[in-house]
Image 1: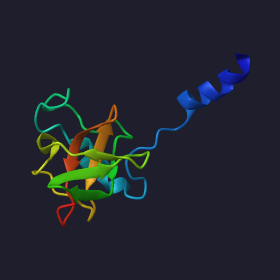
Image 2: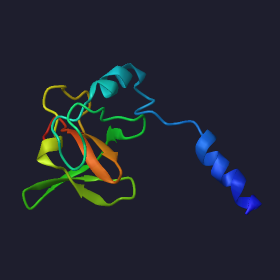
Image 3: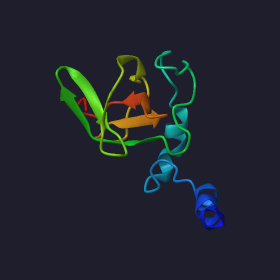
Image 4: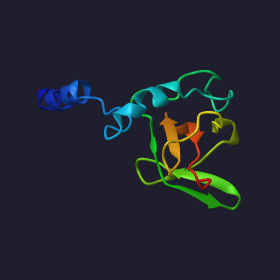
Length: 113
């Protein structure tokens, strides 16, 4: 068991990658994102971003439903109630926030996806 302790410690002491480090001027924008509506166990007004949850992600339209690519390459449906429309988007690509394997917030890109 002791040989696994250093690996577990590494998980807890590693620096947290916050949003997009190449664009530090957007840190406050990320922090301003809040869940727009109650849905999927997320409460309206709750912060979307918990430092690593939100980032630009590929989006596709399949059968009339938008999906965003998760970290493992899987595709997750974007709930209509998760879409934020009043914050603008400084990226061309959609910014998607995923917590607990579900999308809690989405700011669509300049071309819809």
